[in-house]
Length: 108
Image 1 (cartoon, rainbow, N blue to C red):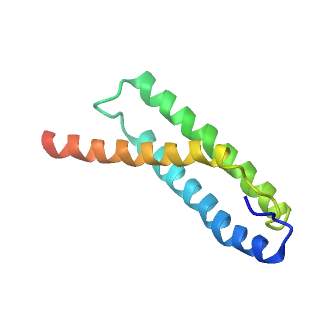
Image 2: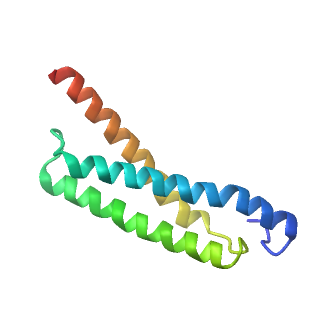
C-alpha cells in the first residue's frame, strides 16, 4: 500500500477507506436486521445464527478499524488481508438476500 505519511496518500486513503468502512457497516447492519426478523426457509436455525454471528464479529472488527483509522486522522493503513474477508462477507450477505427474494417469489 501507499505510505500513509505522505499528505496526498493520506487524503487518498481517507477518500477510499472512510466510505468503505461505512459501506461495510451499512450492509452488515441491514443484513442483521433482516435476519433477525425472519427465519430463512433455505437455512436451518443454527446456520442462520452462525451466519449472524459472523456478521456481528465482522461488524465489530470494522468498527474497531474505523475507530483506529479516525483516531489516527486517516494515517493508518489497513492490510488488504484484513479487508478481503469483510468484502467476501458483504458479497455473501447480498447473495443470501437475493436467494431469499427468489425463494419468496417462487413460494408466493
